[in-house]
Image (cartoon, rainbow, N blue to C red; front, side, top):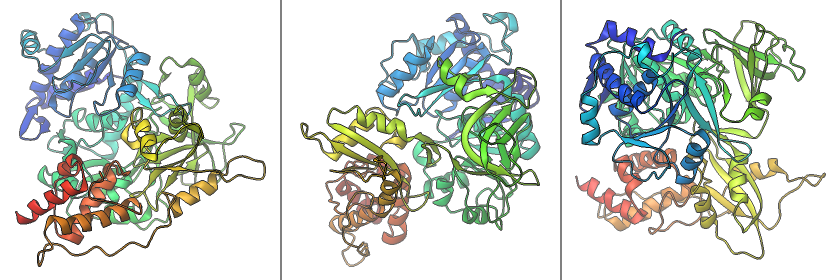
Length: 598
């Protein structure tokens, strides 16, 4: 087994002059990336960073982010990714819970007020200090203690069923087998271009990072708005001649595959890859379908190349060094074709949950099929294996769901809404007809002593939850449907959310008027067309020009869908950045008018 820094430095030896990171117009080769990371690592060691020491990293998408992560790992520390777009309350919880010894940030990240010593990476005086450090690799005796694969590599926080996010502590132990799997399946190397799509706050980011930088390929980074599924993502992949990408099914579903990744690979992960998606994305490129929760080193199994003619898309076989057991309630192996719970074992199993020994003991259990002292992770996922050894994911055994590729515990959303003084009962469910329209609907009963609006409850959720967990609709009920035993009928509420997510029956959708001809290109006409489109996409009965798309329940994927319909039905292409910056639909209509005029 090797650490990330050892694996990376071996690549640098062979590919020093090859491009390592591309961001916009800038290109950083392996030798320079390595030297910058070494200089910063020496500053981190001087600040007390060593094996098992956590370093919080709050840096925008950039080559500097890659330098920071490599430097932390070279110093022997582990990184704690902080997304500056997350609510302050959530970031504060993560930092207080994890206890990092240091925060690395850039000057542009000014909204974080955390009680942690910090280094501002783009501060001229700090850059000057780094430049005075040596750029050669860190020698073992320079670190505060010897670094071995069992030491911590990163901590990533996931949604918690008890209402509190939990940190998953991942060591270097599984990285060697992760890279071995990549080499066996993908065969990437010098000249290949890997898209860095996933958010830094998720372990899929580490997959993109390793697929490129531990295999001698090029990691291509871009601004967030350029990665929005649909036309923006498509243009970015074409502009940078991307060869390999990892995307969730919801992103694949709203992005045209024609001409993308020709001769390369696409890996679907984070949710169920349907037959329709497999049929489209397996043409002209290799399609893989991966499975694995955060509690293993990025993944557990992978299937492919997937053929589009399959009735059900497999998640394949375990990664190198990994084992996936399908067990019954008595931890006995299920026969071929029979569903059971998936238990994950092998080199990729993580340490456990940071500072949560009780939860760790309940989810990471002794492995009766492995060597003495080995453990396996009780995933909560259902699945089966067939006689040919192929694995199939079939669902969950609890209240956890996947939304747009994100793992979401509905219980955490319920806990947040329950903390509002006006709320007495909360039930969160998933609405939507397909992956592209999936959204969270929360049903609440409020106290007669307090008055509160649905918008105020959504704002209460947004103050503590990341964007992908904020309910699209909050519906106030006087009475909940119940089962004969008196418990709330969650199934009925889920079906209600699919039929009428906002609790309205409304009028049928109106046809969207054409715009751009005969004076219809005026902002007023665009306002009318835009309001109707938004009403259809968000399934709300009344939309006005003063409304904000995101306040009505929109999110990034639905914004991409709206942009696509604006282009196809109204003949107007609007940059994704403008979709997020517009304060109202009236303002967005003005952007449309200017775009149409050219």
